[in-house]
Amino acid sequence: MTTTAWSLAGNPNSGKTTLFNVLTGSNQHIGNWPGVTIERKSGKLKHNSQVEIQDLPGIYSLSPYSSEEIITRNYILNGQTDRVLDVVDATNLERNLYLTLQLMETGVPLIVGLNMMDRLKKEGNRKINLKKLAYILNLPVVSISALKNQNVDQLVKQMQESDLQTYTYPEYDDRLESAIKLISATIQGLVPTSQLRWYAIKLFERDEEISADLKLTAVQRQEIENTINTTEKVFDDVSDSIVVNTRYDYITRIMNMCVIDTNDFSMSWS
Ligand code: BGO
Image 1 (cartoon, rainbow, N blue to C red):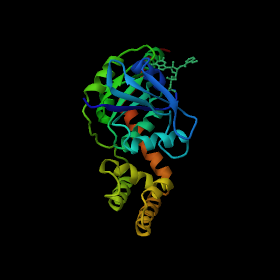
Image 2 (tube, rainbow, N blue to C red; image 1 turned 135 degrees about the horizontal axis):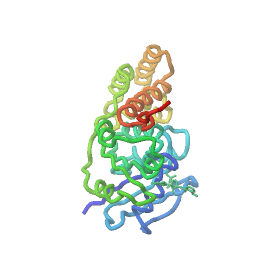
Image 3 (cartoon, protein in one colour; image 1 turned 60 degrees about the horizontal axis):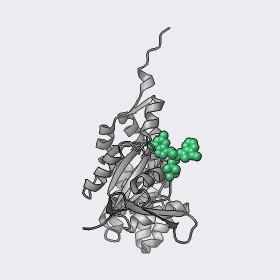
Image 4 (cartoon, protein in one colour; image 1 turned 45 degrees about the horizontal axis):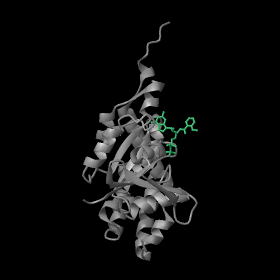
């Protein structure tokens, strides 16, 4: 039997460690990530040693600004994991989805574990339509409470059953999409096809690390810079802020379609 390598990714405090402990039990190895004093935990799924699980550092974004972000993005992009379980805090859905979109941009097969459902229920002022969320993201979404070990068995089932799925990438503003297409054409063949979109977006953001990794020629760099300049003029904004804003526009659409504020349904009697 072949081994499947899973990683847990998510925002700090989304419940990754709690879920990792539930999934692996005492079957854990604790060390450090190379060159840094960030704890590295890995283990095997309880009752199925063919499933390896790596807990990745908690992050908000896949930018190259912190060691945690660099570790996570290199781990995913270098193909060290077959699949990613994105641990999302249901009580902070909007902020957590920002990382989900970026994980989707890498093209890695993904499942969303919507955690803290017990807290969401207790707070009682919001409801998430799980079917719609899974439909819009085009990803499996399993609601859980890692703390209370609720529905984790369904999540494990999904992890063991799911084939390496492909999903449709979240599509942003048309004007940004045009730039991504042009940059993708310039770097076609230099990166795996499934990661083309991620690299194109990073180059659009002028991510220096990625530019250096790809060893682009002067002509390619100029082509990309021309595309960025034209798009910045169209948006009247700088490139990295264009990407951040279009991701948040997409998240706003998801929130409008999938989340109900139950206070909106209460009657006010005068
Ligand atoms: C403390 N439900 C609820 N209600 N809480 C959860 C769940 C869940 O499903 N999952 C995790 N938590 P981490 P990262 C704490 O530690 O796993 C809680 O960073 C406290 N500690 O118990 O560490 C979990 O690995 C004192 O809470 O997250 C933890 O992703 C008071 O979310 C916190 C209250 O979980 C973060 C909570 C001393």
